Length: 433
Image (cartoon, rainbow, N blue to C red; front, side, top):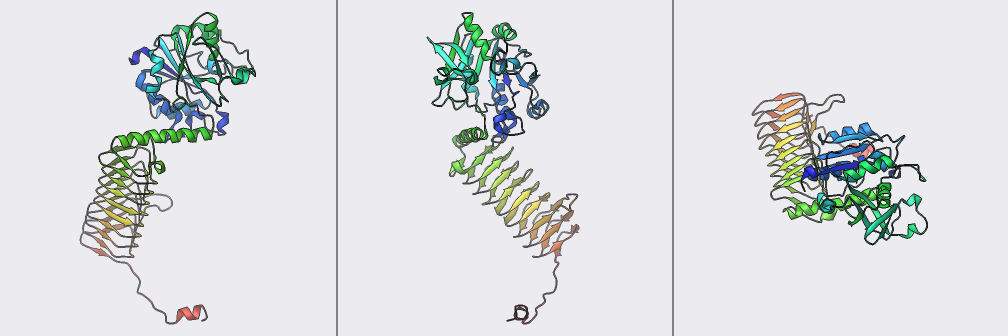
């Protein structure tokens, strides 16, 4: 469908008290991004007119979404005087003749899952699904293929609570329907709220047809608790990993792997079991070995792990990173760091070998400093490089050496060691044996 033919309104004003959290409900994350982010991202594929209705923690929600999107309209709901989903729509103005209303707690919605709403010519299309356990959902009363009314669980009678057809919470309205009925809403109900579902009742009373659209629960799953959040994240994880495996990435025991939404793979890549790759990481023609963690980093033509940790802003190219090596905010090109090392705030150039137990000491308790290591540098095991420091090309650092701030020139060997002392029979004296 042409993006200019549909407007989308996302209701993101609620507190989400059942989440039992001080954080706004729509800002809880799934696969590395806020729930609201996922919904806006999908919405932008099918519409160029997106409005997000906010209230609870509105400043925080607007600020966070503005980090990702610069073309979203935000409307602040007067939730004190006009609470509820109907109240949320009172000050919304859309530019297109068809309006799709989504909830901000449905992060699994995809553009494909919404196409059924866009194809219908009905004045009102509403989503429904059948649940074995409908607890928590509004019940939908359908007769002769048309929606007769919707009853919120809080207002349902005993017989209505037995209905298993429930409201999935997504609607498509013609703009004229909203313009006519939103001003007529009242809050004469148990919760004293203005319900968007009352538009259905009024339109039905006026003889208009309301078409139900059966949708799948997986994509339209609402998040109302931390348990729901975990279930939804597992579903999205399976989708993310299936997409990348279908694109050619090898994943060993994929159920044990965690890949966030912003991660990108290119070329021939292998990810072994137990790995966690997060943020905006990019993996290019590389092998990530078991139980490694990569955060907001680039790995190109390299192997990492097992049990290695790339912290944010690391750039690894043509490099071997072995087990128990931690890299933070550093660039390594053509380097070998086999095991048990920490490289932070550093630039390391090709041909350099970093021995076991080497540490860049980049933090003095107040400030962080840079380490620059040239080409073909050999750093012996258990050495400490105290930044700021420069090791020029073709330098050797003897095992166990502490190199303090300064510069080691090309061709030089740096050695710092105390003369070995051997005290005869000390063991027996100490333990009185």
